[in-house]
Length: 121
Length: 234
Image (cartoon, rainbow over the protein chains, first blue to last red):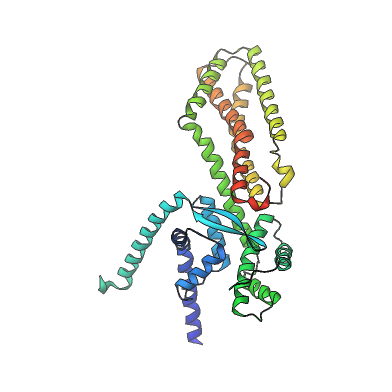
């Protein structure tokens, strides 16, 4: 019973951490891959983290829409098979946002390490 | 290699998404592609998996509210997008070179109000009415009556119209100021400060009407022709 509860707590913590970093992940992936569609982003994150991080649709699309609203992302629709697909890419504002976000994330990780493992510093 | 879904299966997805209360066509396209990509991927891993089973499994992974969160977050993001663009455009009148034009209009109107007579004020009122009516006529002729044509069909257009309504609310401020000063004084007799306030407020209103009639619809058309080519509404 206890391992199950612990696993649940860790999953929730993971999910919260992931949710907080989702914008950075999306912007970084788009910067590396030029353009991507929603489902592709979820799969790429799974692939890069060996299935450790799973981005749900409920988290990804609000983030994409929010970034599009802010003018950080733009999109184009193209025909694929019998349907249309929306490809997201970074705008110029998004490129400069990436530099700031990566720096913030690095600082955050560095500070978290200092708190969690003070003997390493 | 991944097999693409057939046309019938894609149509079933559209029907499914619509049955879950997603009325906007542009949003339907987005959700259908996501579902189709996931189904194709699941079927490529398990060729025995039927389309219906894959779809049911996928939908069960969505929150209990189904696609509602998807639609509402997109709606608010699109509204923010348009409000920022409207505000950005209006604020561009405070930067060069547009500030020169705006400043010139304020200056001319200030001179007019300072030296106005009841007769001149009547002429100004008629000119304003003619300007407003011409703008309305132009909008209609240019096919910019998006509300009548596309309301509740496309989120991209509904968000644009909603942004209009929100920003239009702020335009009430100069109208209130104008009304207050005009009703408090004898028509055509204004002091130095009143004439400046009147000129600035009337300029804001004229620039807003100009942007509302000529610029914002062009922005929407550009947006539709760049991002929503598949909807063929630009």
